[in-house]
View: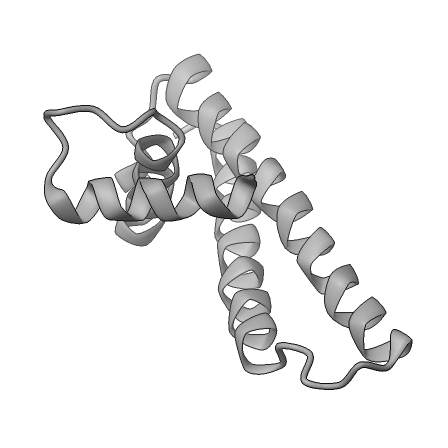
Length: 112
């Protein structure tokens, strides 16, 4: 395996670990307070999560599309996370299962 692949693999695994950790923290600490500081801190975590997701997706696309590696060579979890993200960004269509349709509709509701 190439040195570049190994560097990108490390970056993907690090990002994935940070995404999981930050997501858990965000879910646990949904602001129950109306203080500006609490809301600001939570919002900053959400913004950092979005940045990590964008970085993850960019690096995953490079590994997959430009270098031609299967993301499963990085890890099964990384491949599943990437595949889920790709699935959720496509519009709802008739071939989707009911569960996938519900998830996509929920994501669209959040985006709006």
